[in-house]
Image 1 (tube, rainbow, N blue to C red):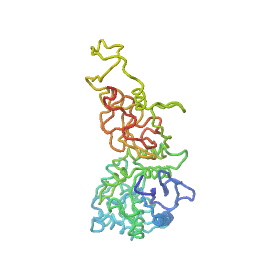
Image 2 (spheres, rainbow, N blue to C red; image 1 turned 120 degrees about the vertical axis):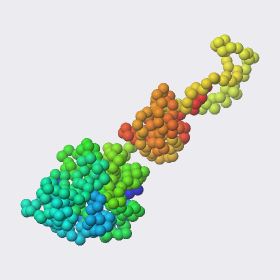
Image 3 (spheres, helix red, strand yellow; image 1 turned 180 degrees about the vertical axis):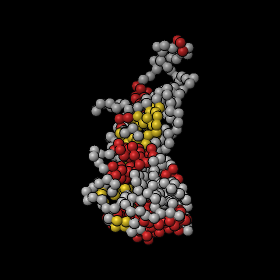
Image 4 (cartoon, one colour; image 1 turned 90 degrees about the vertical axis):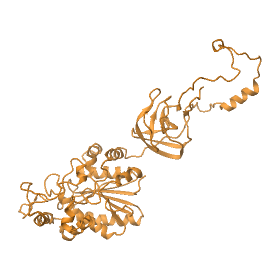
Length: 443
């Protein structure tokens, strides 16, 4: 399964304390292990969730479990901001800068005043931040984008690749994430400092520590989350539950490919370019349960057995003797006669190695125990071969008589598998070449 034992997804909020009862636009967190998510947790404010995060990280370290801790706000600003703010491009300097200046309490924080202060210092009060959500005016922080001048790019490269993602400069209004970033970076800074040297932040550092801080964006699979949302479930609750469960179902190879992407200066969003894999993991969150292995396409009723071919031939050789001589005749005159010697066909039949059963083909063998393989799109049927190559570790739908696709030498019976359309599960052992026929096996 995954290189991480535990996945936690946190839906952040930049606002003040919310109601005691679970509500939307607050802070939600979900934990998942082995493809199963626990009941999501609701937090009224950031102080409560930070205490919980500290306890969580310590518990995972004590249990010697690798933790992937995911937050749904940008870990860095667009290019140029860190240099203008701190004199260096290091995003961790920005984390520390905000940690020193952000004032956060359950019912109040200084995010709007801090945004105005930055605007006055960086762009004569005309940017890069906009959106004053308070009743009072704040010098340097415009309420709208009118008369707005941003000296930096409006979006990171990651947002450009994620249609619908909002700019981190917007501090208030629908979809605003600017407050989340400003109130979230100090928490990341404190986690990284408190648990050093056990924490690494992606994609700025190599993930060779037991705890990884990772940026996510649940809306990357918004349609899937909506599809899997429970009746009357709060949307924020659904998205942390579905995403945490999906991440914990990714194979190490797929997750590794996701983590290989990213910008060491601007940060990135986990899963960009891998939406289909993330969606498939979310939809297939429950493990498949394969049936008992039979692996016999010629199964007879209980108590009835075939005589093995070699045994049958040995009995024939022992009990039969020639009763007449041999004669060579043309094929057209051979009807009703018994073949006395080998006859050689002009061409092989079947002309190619093919499958003897309906099922799924892959590169064997399969050792004892349960197996799970993703399916490649398409199928191979008699007379309709599969044009591509089946990658190692993948399977393809095959029908009886179909030429074995490139990359396939073994077939599992349809009846011995469980499938959800995207993957199959079955039990081994299965010998290499099982349920296939060699080229020329008939003649």
